[in-house]
Length: 307
Image (cartoon, rainbow, N blue to C red; front, side, top):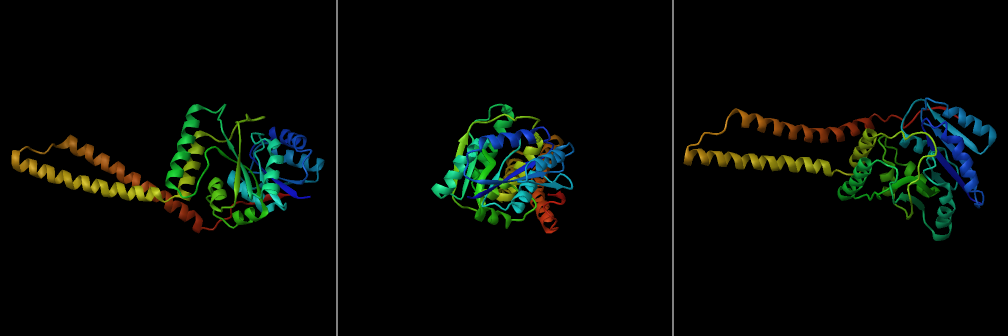
C-alpha cells in the first residue's frame, strides 16, 4: 500500500483546519492508501498553530511546520514537499476549495493510467468578483502567448504527484517562486481533472486583488523574457518616430515656412517620452530586482517549530 503525503499550507486558518481534517477523513475513507499530513503554518497571527498541535495529539499521522514569519504560500508548499516522505505527494488548500473527494480518482490515474501528476483546474469562477475573474483570464492569455511554459487557465495548486516529479521540483530552489509555472516547467505527464468552483468552508481569502496582481507579475518575469523584448521594440519604435518627425518638421519649415509648435507641444512630447522611458526602465528593474534577490542566496523559509 502506497503512502500519500498531504501538504496543507495555512495562513490564519484556525477555523478551517479542523473542518478540513474531518472532511478529508470522511471523503477518503475507502482509499487504498496510507496518509501522512504535513500542515505548514505560514507565520499565522491567530491560533492556527494551536489547532495543529491539537490535531497531532488526536492523530499521530499529522506533522506540522511553523515558520518564523510569513514567507508566503509558495514557500509553505516548498517546505511541505521537502518534509514529505510519501510515495505520492498531494498539495491541498485547507479551506476545502480543493475537494478531497477527487483524490481517489487522482490516485487511480497515477497507478492505473501511468501519469506522473494529476492536477485540477476550475471550469467556473462562481462566487468570485467579475473584475477579478476578468483579470485572471487575461493573465493566462498573456502568459501563454509570451512564455514557452504552458500555464493552464484555471489551474489550481491542488494536485497529486509522484515522488520523482517532486524530487525534480525540489531541485529548483529559486526564492521568487511561481509554482504553477514550475509544475509545468519540470515536465512529466500530467492529467487535468476539471471541477466547478467551490466556496470556502470558513474564513476569508488571504489573496487581495493587489497581491494577485503582484503574483502574476512574478509569474510573467519568472517564465518569460518577452517584456524585455517589448521594452527594446518600444525604444526602437520611438526612435524611428522621432526621426520621421524631425524630417517632417524640417521639410515643412523649408517649404511653407510654418513655425514649429511651441511650448505646449514640447511639454506633451517630453512627458509622454519620459513616461515611456520610465516604463521600460521599470521592466528592466523588475528583472534586475529578481536577480538581486536570487544572488543573495537567502533561504526560502525559516522554521521556528516542527513536529
